[in-house]
Amino acid sequence: MLFKYIGNFRWKDVFEKPYKINDNSFLNVKRFEIVKGKDVEFRYFEIEKGGYSSLERHEHEHIVMFIKGRGIVLIEDETYEFEPFDVIYIQSFKAHRFIAKYEDIGFICVVKKDRDRPQKLSEKEIRDLINKNPNLKEFLKFGV
Image (cartoon, rainbow, N blue to C red; front, side):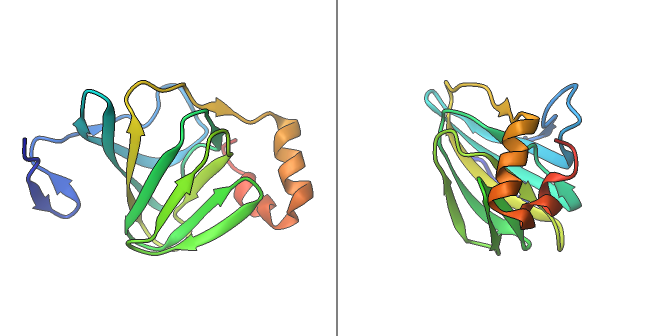
């Protein structure tokens, strides 16, 4: 089955879905499920400049390829600046957040279809991350 790219980071007959419902731990995130296969999902996310994803961890691992814009990804107590076509691997139970600090960003994320639900970090876990790396405070101050 072909999912036809129609330009401007959109695919034919693929529509925006809520990133999360009844959750204020993120800002300006769009989610598109391009392929929902029997065992895996191939998804595209966009975050507007100034926005960010939820700070979360989960058992399932995932692989992300950034295809639009430059931004920052936080993984545990480290931050990494990325640009288009950089790839990041997020291991099981690693806290992470995507941040559109400089401009709008977009990324492809591949995950197993059957997976656990994300877990928010406790206030203590967030303080522990900041104690390990005080520079993280800038990226953890909002929408936790």
